[in-house]
Length: 289
Image 1 (cartoon, rainbow, N blue to C red):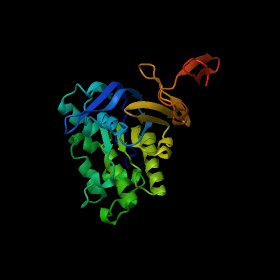
Image 2: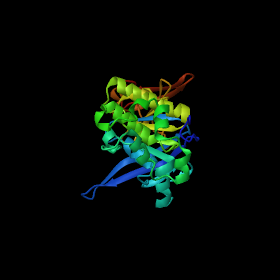
Image 3: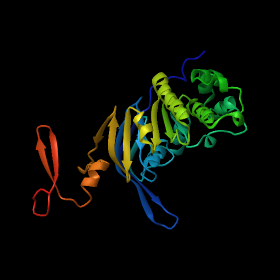
Image 4: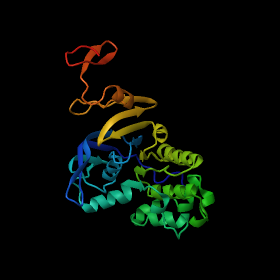
């Protein structure tokens, strides 16, 4: 039995001053991303955390080649998404990048079983690549889902369907997995099972994993989490520690608790100390408040 899904090195992703602008039906421009700079190393596991409308799903669409940036560069596996042809983008989406959309039903053929869904997910791969991959049953066994191989989707729970959707997504052996809210509407146990699968493909197959979530608990399960606020990177978490991120223009987004203490318009004074940088609020005369 094969022990990996066409094991390959994970894919690196880089954003350089990325701006994304949408035009509404009424002709108004909406800025979804504002000068994002980000490096994700090959083989990393990263969570993009933020509320609805923060820009995190837009980033995921750029990584997957679904969108091209309005300005700046998005580089996936060494290829600039804004410059490659539509044909190259199609090949990237079918082989280099795997996407797990929010909600199992958006990823699966409802009338087919687990094996058929995996085989359908591989249909766009070249014949030689398909032949090099483990069979659908072998893949399910490797992912701990052998018991689901012969069951119709209609007999499965929501968590089981989501796991089959996951198996179909990673079945191509892609080096980059993009997962949009993969634990949404799952029970606590099913959520933990999904997180375990994300860790498994990263550890065993070398896959770079990028997931989008609004749940801080899910984000904390990843070695690295990036908080997106108003189209900008607000902060990063790495192995249980939280860090601010300095923008290109020197701006730093304050954590929520400090933002409450220093609301917009507050005059502040910075002082470099042996231990770091001291931030204090001052009044209009420069006196400490």
